[in-house]
Image (cartoon, rainbow, N blue to C red; front, side):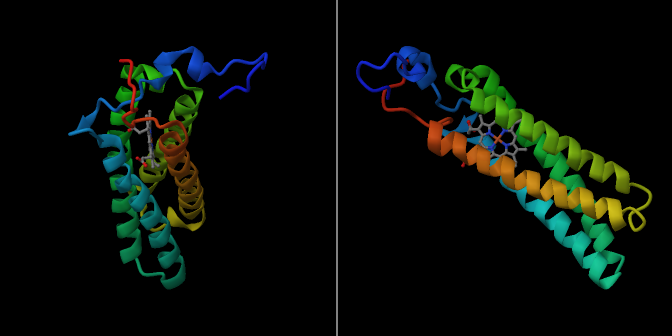
Length: 169
Ligand code: HEM
């Protein structure tokens, strides 16, 4: 809240529409996006784990695990991304916040990276891992952590996707 007599105004107070943040892509009020993001997050971390285990053991089994983890992370990430994007476009209080668009940009970069990592492995599961596949997986894991943390920030700092006590929509 802006202090009294301040020459600055609080955009949230000024534009009541910013308080309309309740999720529309939800089951009984619980956002689908929040339920789905667990899959790409867990699978991207598993992908990095499988690459590290292949590096350590040289067992080709881990390259097959990595290939499926990359495919699953990309597929579920795109599905989660679609639910998030519809939410972003449909809900006024979400699309009016710059932080929501920052999350969108981070997520699109992440999904592109995971997709490239998966495509790069097709037909050469073992050759692809060292060094480029492993590097892509490490960067994707770091970007997943940043994107996931930022998604949490949207919910906990800006109450995005939550039901506000006084929702003007
Ligand atoms: C591609 C476009 C994406 C858009 C437009 C988007 C949008 C959103 C929005 C609007 C929220 C607020 C909660 C809600 O309304 O559901 C959110 C939360 C979140 N997002 Fe995304 N998202 C995208 C992709 C991703 C991806 C790929 C990840 C995986 C790392 C991710 C991780 C999260 C997390 C962890 C939360 C917090 C969930 C919670 O604690 O309830 N998002 N996102």
